[in-house]
Amino acid sequence: MRLRKKLIEWLFEKSKKIYTNLFKSQHPWEISKKQLLTYPKNSFGKHLGLFLNENNFELIPKVERHDAYHTLTGYGTKVEDEIALQYLCYGNGKRSYYLYGVMILGTIILPDYYKYYYKSYCIGKNANSFHHFDYKELLMISIHDFRQVIFSKSQINTLIQV
Picture (cartoon, rainbow, N blue to C red):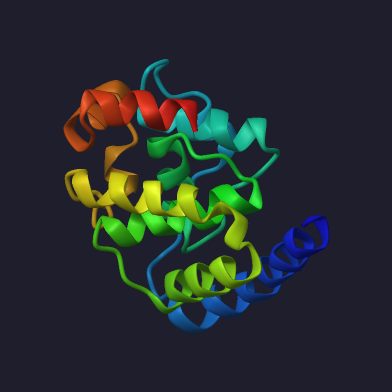
């Protein structure tokens, strides 16, 4: 399984640049991790900064929303979590070529996590729509309030344990 996960990591790295250059036309946020870490304690922006800091990441220009999804849902950055996050987003109504590619290849290469993927799909399907938000505009809101608007109490408890 380790070799299959390495293959998917390699595919993520190679496809990320191609996807952002060819398919993403929105403007980068131009906000650094350092700036996010100065946001108020319970804000979504502060938690996004903490997520980036814990994983030694910076926001990727034009696809900042992906890390916002991680922050909102509590999904980690392991390969299986990245795939499951795409399933959750698909269940929530998000559609993109990249999402389809991750779901299809991820399921073929790592079918061992199918139950996790399906559970994630169901969470997204039953949550209020969140995939369309302008997350840059939501950085100052309370992460707890934001999650309560999107997910049920039981979903929040499930997501935080992911």
